Image 1: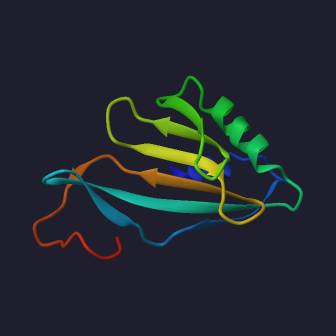
Image 2: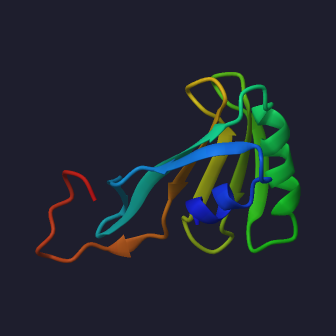
Length: 122
């Protein structure tokens, strides 16, 4: 889904899409966990990240997600796509580096197989 969001940005505005190869597991409600990861979208120089974040907000209106917005702690406009039925969430905002947008995500909660250990990368 991170890549679907990134791929929906207008052609000519994106120079690179980097999805982290791994993420982490976080406890939802024992024995349930969910996976968290992120994708960074590098924009063409001079492209205003907030304008694209707001365009994504408009694109996902009337979708399967509830949408919330806020000013993130770093001061950037953030769109949250939240599943009304699960813990699935996507946070879309200006990235840590100039000319980037970060798409952070959390999956639905699931049971970790007994042979798996919660620590480490997934």
